[in-house]
Image (tube, rainbow, N blue to C red):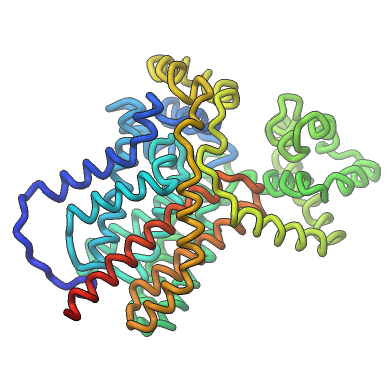
Length: 459
């Protein structure tokens, strides 16, 4: 059985949507057990977009705009239910395309396994765009290796969805830039030259549309035609946290007065100098950007260039070290500590979502007991599947299974790309890799189904 082949099975008409609903409920178990949707400190900024139609400087507004209809119609629970249903839809499309079957049982079983042995439920129930990193990767795979049978309507839908998902987080742009060529080369290597070329072109069009949409929005609202408004500040913070840019900034300030020199006290008072520059209450970063945005960005870029030019070997060494560190870090629940959420996001919840704020205050997260729901099984499973991925690829190649081989290459490449992008541009945090490690258990599920189908077909 190959993707796209018809397989007629008489089932109740509502079996497939019922399976999606049940699968979504399974993936929401952590939010249900918590007693509230999960909040990250940045959740408040996205809710400000959806509630007040604000336009943040440091992140795209598209995720906040996308959740606004569900938040207005059904509250914050409606947002995470919609996220769960969309996740199960993408997973269902993947299972249908790679097996040729529309099996409600397979979808529910896959959701149950992912709910119990992956990081996915931590992001499905969280008001953050991190869930959509893995879904972006799956859409790229589907376009390149398993496009819909209908070349017009369904492919256009995939392209538009991929474009929207890329706009949800700036890291998605860099990941897509790295992943689309890898998927293309893998498709050509596996003998799917025409299919891979068409699919990669469509994915590239989606990427271009996303970049243009973000740039146009920033140009209309902020008078800056660029996808990221303050990318220089985050990269400078990364170099400060690495211990490389601080001395360069000190020398630059000794040479001539810079606006950034006023930020040095905040850097010393924070747990990391770069985080102090970005977020410390004494940091003048926001005031500098509002008073002289062009000058501030130019100064940030100047310090970045000088740091890279003066210490290229150290920059490369730390980039490689942190890439490897990020690759093997992925503990679920990172960044969901009650004190940080209470300090940053809770004021917005109390003002605009009082019932949700009250529910959060009595939740496991609000009482600092969310770690009761975390266990290392998801990391163990991801590590085992990651170690087994070369053998899955070899077995798929031996059997001539281009779909499974392509999925293995795309997922492994995506894990490498995600670790590189996040560690080099932001820092090493468990949540960055945890947002994509659930793809490894999904790879194991697909491998099991593909091998089982081939065995049953051979018999």
